[in-house]
Amino acid sequence: MLLVCMGAAAYLGAKGLGELQERKAGSDYYARLAGAVSEEASTPAPSEEDLPAPYDAPLAAAGQRSAIDFDALRQTCPDAVGWIRIEGTCIDYPVVHGEDNVYYLSHLPDQTANSAGSIMMDSACDGGFGSTVSILHGHHMRSGAMFGDLDEYADEAYYRAHPVIRLLTPDGDYDVEIFAACTVNGRTFGYPTGFQDAAEFDAFVENLKSETAYDPGVTVEYGDRVLLLSTCAYSFETARFVVAGKIVV
Image 1 (spheres, rainbow, N blue to C red):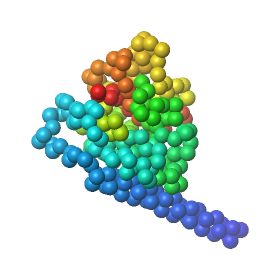
Image 2: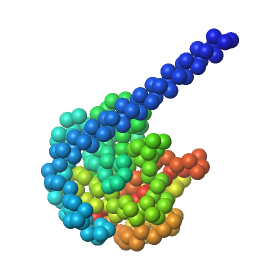
Image 3: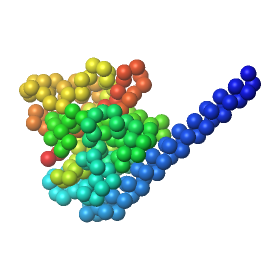
Image 4: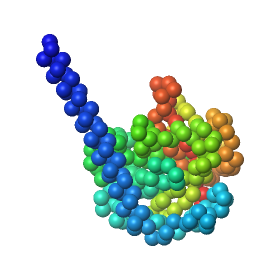
C-alpha cells in the first residue's frame, strides 16, 4: 500500500511539473511573438503626450495599413485573422479563426499543442470581422494570462484605466470602445453574431448594458459592429464573463 501511495504521489508530482512547464512554454511563446510583431510594426506607437486624455479619439484612423505584418505572421500562424491589445494589461495576442471552437482551446496559434490555447474567434463569425458581433474566446488562466484578467472589468476603476481595446486586422487597425462588461449564463446567452432587425440588436445591447455595474457612456446603434470578448467565470456552473465594445470605423 505504501508503494502504491508513493507511486501515486510521484505521478501527481510529475504531472504537476509537466503542467507548469507547459504553461511556461505557452507564456514564453506569446511573449516572443508579441515582441517580434512589436519590432516589425510599420508605424511607432504614439507617446502619451501625443494622445488626447483619455482616448477622446481613435489612436489611428480606420483603414490605415496595419501595424502588424499579417503575411509574416501567417507564416507560423496560418489561421491568424487579427490581433488584440489592451494597453496596460497582459492582453496582447493574435486572434485565430479555426474550423471549429475546439482545436484552438488546446493549441497555440502556431498549432503547437498547449493547454493555454489561443484567443479564438468563434467559428460562426466572419473571419474578416464582418459579423455584427465578432466573438473572441480565451481561457481564464489563474496567472492572469490570456483572458484571465478580463473579469477585472467588473470594477469601474479598472474600466476607466483601460476603456479601449486595440483591434489590429489585415484591413487596418481600429479602436474598440468598451460599452459593457458583465457575467452571463453561457448556456442561455446564445452568442449571436447577427440580428434580424434593429429591435433585436438594441435588445442585445441594452441587456449587456443593464447587467454592467457602471455606465461607460458609449452610444451603440444598429449598424455598428461589436467585438465581444468571453471567458469562463466561476460564480455559477455555466457562468461566462464578457466584455463588449463598439468597433470605431
